[in-house]
Length: 484
Ligand SMILES: [Zn+2]
Image (tube, rainbow, N blue to C red; front, side):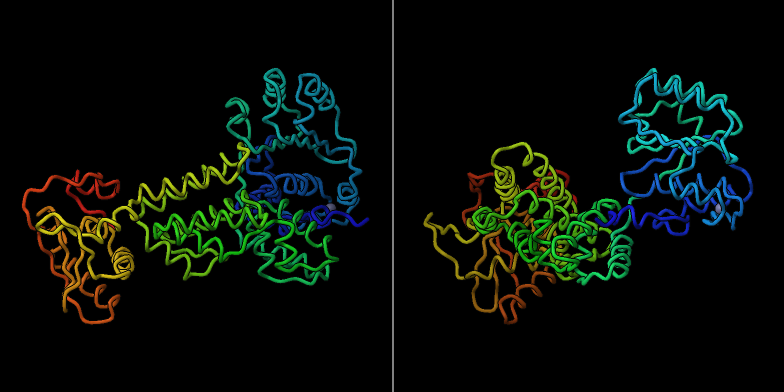
């Protein structure tokens, strides 16, 4: 059986470690200048290279033929360390050795001089798992370490480590690995292994890994074993249950447009097809998050087209997009706990529509009250929704105000009937008028002027259905303008 790819491609030198330059550079300098500390704390999520760096460090600090802070990988000591035969490297997994006895045992071992190397290096992985008593025993050792001992404590949960321990250590925070770095790394491995691969498929694997090399490489391993080293979108989808990007972007666009029925239809279809709903929720979260980041930073995720991100980012206000990401992320948690995983998502879709108020508002907008109290359809056709979206992409607060308007198309004019003078004046504002004229002409395919009028009948009682649009409420409450 071939060795697991993750072990096979573990970095042997500091320069092989990707994505943690700030850590490796500092360590190499310290080793080269002979200014090595006796206790280090490596913090960071799993699979970002904490243990690998700890091992390289233990090798380098003992290497007989150091090359600018890098181990030579040729001397007797390096060879021992690489073969896993070094007696002076002691690795402890605190997850399974968390008690006082293990630390007492360690304190006994530490007294003895190194076997062969200059330093005895103790790597304690998942150190946050130690019991209180064990931490106290460890603290005593860290307070007066023998000159020949070096401790490297590694943890995914730094906040669980007592301050007294942290203050004794030199701390390094390992970063999550960027998508591109992981994808490049996977490509490198795939090439060396002579896998037949599709770059896009590697990107999907990278995106699935949540910034962890270990998870990414394990997944690559799984996918490649599935079909004799062939890594295409098809294999990745089968293993990861990845949902087509088109389905995700289509779903989100339905949400943005307030097309609740269509959005629910997408979920129904997924369930019918036996697709993994949890995976769909996860992927949708990734997409919305990318759209949010695009909105705030213009940074484009490599997973999605700029066009699809831009479309969503422009159509939602900052608050709306943040809310949406939060809601969907919460859905993921809930879906894991329920027997019907699609239910939390369905609830979120319906809730979102209520908050948006688009459907209700738009239905109301299509009717107008006549003087006699009868209702009649206005000939703005289906274009009104499109017009609203067009405006929304330009200016959110105007769009919010438009939801209170009742449109009427007559000749070369798009008349907007308002119930309140306040709304009418805000929309009539010169700057806003220009946006509206432009949007109307574009959507209706002819030169149109927008004209704002107050609804006849004067003091009408307010609508029975209160406006559920938060943005609108905020604008009204504070009389301000939402800057988008
Ligand atoms: Zn060496």
